[in-house]
Image (cartoon, rainbow, N blue to C red; front, side, top):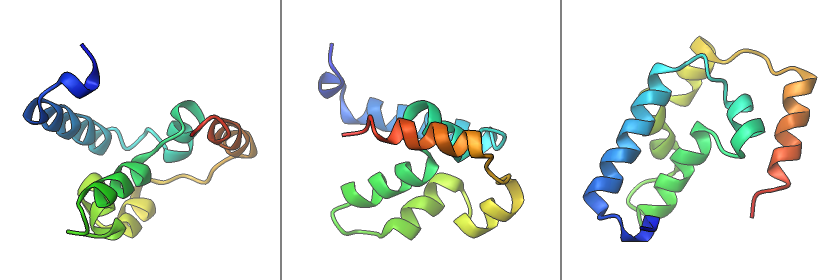
Length: 97
């Protein structure tokens, strides 16, 4: 089975599960997600906005992913990135399409 063969309702439930998991795991820093996988919570919010067909913007998409305004999440949970984290992120980003 490929991802395109999964029905939309199942895919939507899995996406919501992922988002709730990331909302719970505030210790998983965006810079680390970017360094490991090349995407983060901001990316998910931006992808939501892109796929909404103009129904909402990146700010609204990110708020849905964070469960709160991004500025609030950043103030409450985001630690300063180390030079090593930033380097891993930059290296990882070069592998994205």
